[in-house]
Length: 557
Image (cartoon, rainbow, N blue to C red; front, side, top):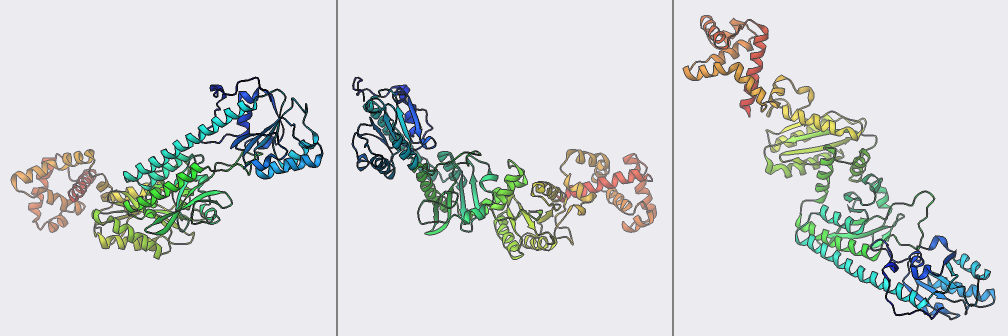
């Protein structure tokens, strides 16, 4: 060990590493430092274990250095105290390995010019990285540089922990929604974070390093294989970091942090490198507290919030991919395999009853054993995505839901889209149900719900009633009659209606209007004069009939 260098200098800028924030200093990081690289380090054993974290550096010339170690130390030695006999070397290495030393670095300048074979065999058998230095290195300088970096990292960790506390406090003070809290957890940790309830349904998922379809794939099975404890812990075959979430003194669910993505084919994730650090634990525990408070601020059942969010994303195709939509729906308990799907909409003017109706719809579907996502898609509009078994008819549950909706609001309009066999096509069913809802006439007798086959000309005109082109058409066709009736107090428009309803049969039209045939003829002649048309023309009568229907639906509002 050279003594001809100053040992009191601070680390140079190029002594500092470029590690990711929050990652502990590793053996590989230390070997890359200029002060160590100057000794031309060569890794003799343990090449696959250089990612071991270095907690401290220990210089020793003792034959039993392990008694002064606590684990995680990078041991520096000139090799002078190594035992001569192989058994002593094995014991020396075994003690270092048992205490958890990060690596053994031996300088080949004084006693040895190449590492003893007994030392190599012992380190290889115990999985202890052995590194040789072929040039003189100032061990004290190495110690100072590494310890400065470690202490700096510890100070940085304290600063980041304070930031975590401040972030979670700010979320709580502004009454953040649970989605915001979980999103913040994913951003602070860099891990995927999932909030689930007691029946292992994923309410909220914020993916960080993977897509939703990967994070939530086969969620319930994987979640049930991961036990819950009373405190934050790593559990399950995948090594999830989990912590409980409580509400009013009882456990409501848990928040889960997933480890990073699996290594590339042929890669290896060493057992001694933890997937999570102390900061991740801090994030998860503080987020669990923030979620508990958020549950008090936002009392609407979070299952309902989750269903609403998922339903909107699926109906509007806001997912990144069909697989993501399937994974999210399945994680909420909706069967997505070997099923048929149907979109249902309920439009109600009693908006103050929307929440009650939503709850009743959920109850009715559970009673009918129909898995579904139910939620408000827009003010005054509730939606439901039904998952049906291959042989299960859809009309009975739809009838049941329709009766429930009409009980609360007799003018509610219930519409359904076409069945689809793949969830990725369900947005088409929602679009169809929307078109049916726009065309359906409120309070239609004999129909508790509407489907596409119910939409005729009158319903189509009802859907287009606010279109200025339709309104202009009505005015062009019927405006002169309505103006004449207004100025002169006549009934030409009703007379035209009777005539058209009678398909041009004058005798039937006179009877419908309680008019004499002569009076009817006079009125029809006046109508033809005002409109400049021949009422004997079938095409002209069709045009006027459409205009009358459009006028009727416009007046219905």
